[in-house]
Image 1 (spheres, rainbow, N blue to C red):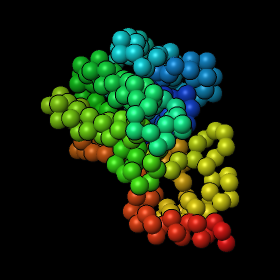
Image 2: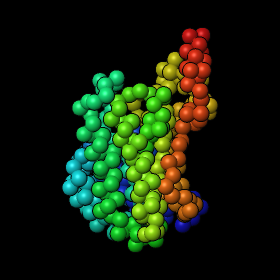
Image 3: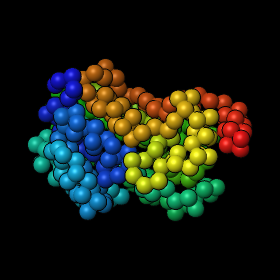
Image 4: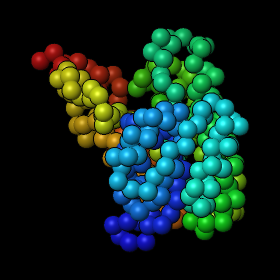
Length: 268
């Protein structure tokens, strides 16, 4: 391990690495010296991304809504990697905006399967490898919406699956600690994606973000990736069972006052 490459020689499984936060995490892991197997349903898109990544990475096509497929893909990734030191569970199904305001909707099975069950199946499959590595680490990508319903009252399935992932993180930390494996989660807030139209491209949205986020900006994918790399590295060797909020202070703001300031600023 070197200061600039704290994960030199380590091997990681990453789910959902073809785009957005997952792609940023893939870049961060490779830059830190890691060999990465990306489990993703979008095989063609992920392969194009891997071709541009400039580091040791491979795509394993996987439908993460199927537990057996998760297990098989994990074994395939492990065989290519030659072992597993790190697991990063980032995959999530698309958020169905039509579910807003509905208590039960058709998106429940997908969120339960991809966000929670896939993460558990992958960790369960490669736990012997993580324990044998001597530096095993699991990082689950959660969300502030697993803890805070005031920020966004979107799909309940999304909120509930992320809250369940937080609790699974704590449970796994206790179960895996005796094997020398640390388990933590990262909970991002507002994130500007690395592709497509950014949240803050709209000047009104930009003003709102500046009012409600104490650090006055949305996160970049790299902001989340840096925390994942830290939690996977020896620099966090005594941290486990934690859900680390990375939101620029968004959840610190008193909701009504922040919203009032945002709307006043947007209308000025």
